[in-house]
Length: 265
Image (cartoon, rainbow, N blue to C red; front, side, top):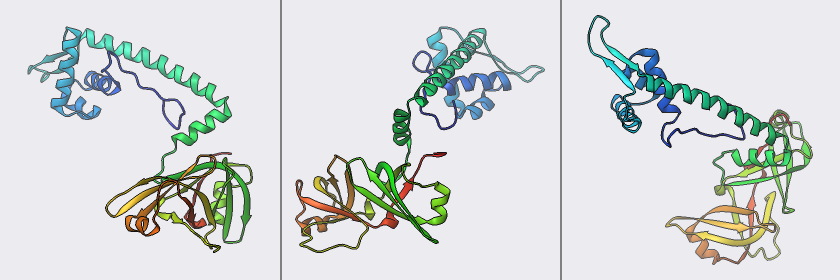
């Protein structure tokens, strides 16, 4: 199966014969050359021979017939045993793809579950990723401010160009994921009545400190269980006397927040 799918699977016959192996066999059948077939399937020539010999040993019969020299210049072809393996692979692959498509269709009928799986499948370098719903959109001629309500009751605000907001189709009540790099998050303790200018301020409790020689990682657990991760200079941890169980506030600017929304929503 190809494209963005929620269900994927891999077939391995006998626990080791995978799609790459059968691509090698099919390329040998098409080209009559192990050398050319190896390049097609992503093997070195030696690697192709090793996997073919290993499979033949397990099958107790050869998979390749080789003709050396002669009028046709020699070459390689699949034995009947190899052709039977390829035929079995093709049949199982068709049934496997049909099964996966059926499960994908079933999942798409479960909107909440499908949405959760899409969020889990997204890959991004940002350490902090929070799922929620857009609760407010303030549009301006140049920039747009989008607020995402998290399930724990907190809110995260992102600022983007109005052109980007139109392209994403941001609007109230749409699902969204707010992403923030840990290097963009500052930790503040003991505000002592002072107010901060940063648009995003999430109060929580220090739950994890992973110290390094120069930089450290601090996890701040918010009410509701979400965790904000901040990259902090190790000397700053000492200066702040930061410890697990201590109250702190994660602070970051709205322009540091990247927003992701489902396609076609």
